[in-house]
Length: 311
Image 1 (cartoon, rainbow, N blue to C red):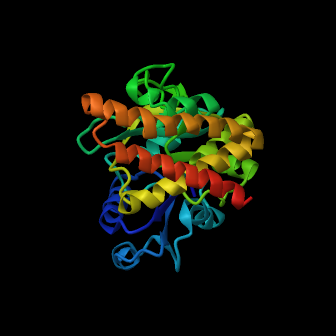
Image 2: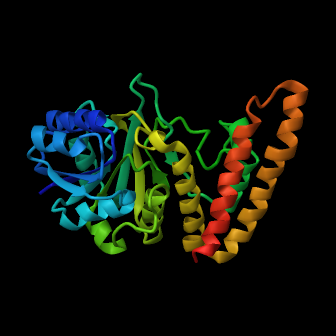
């Protein structure tokens, strides 16, 4: 078996159908298998898979296990020499999987790769990141990454000065389409199931790099990514998951001592949200929605405090 494709689905039946149609239409020249792990969808996703894609190995969970645990269910059963995590809101437009496998075959020194993600209109998604750090967290909390989106210094985390047009080694591509060798998984272990969603692929890539593996971005291989089709259904809840996972990532990889600077950085965000932004709103009408910034400041604080209660 050359390749195992793993798709974790939650309530995006129509996008999942489009994704699977594209996988079977365009994936040629490989012996591959497809797992769909459905996290208790209520939109008929699993019935659609059973009826229209009987060749798919369907794992139907009776509750939402999150991204990491659901992927691990399939990873334990996977037979492919290469493993790819693929979001259900993606769509292949050519033989992308074969191109990724061929690239990896030609570069045995590389452990994992991500391809170029494009929006349906054809625009490039900036889908690679540096690993988060105390510095990038401060830039985010001061909104300097947003004020200077193309700055190498202020927007280092999102690699704002890079157009995603050249082959290069990166820290972490999006988990929307992340391919890695089976040997890598044997070396680093399965995904950390403490990450319900968000930072799961960051943790995975961090462990790959920590053990000496290389991760590359390959711009010549493209797939469509509709982006956030599951998370947008419960956007506020997902923000809680995001920051819960963020604090777990820092605690796991940088140590408990990293959480104090995170709190100080968060204080600066709160001052902006509760003091500075209301004044600038009165003075010049910007930002327009002060409540938005206060809401997300509150979400981050609640998850920061809850992190310690649960540890």
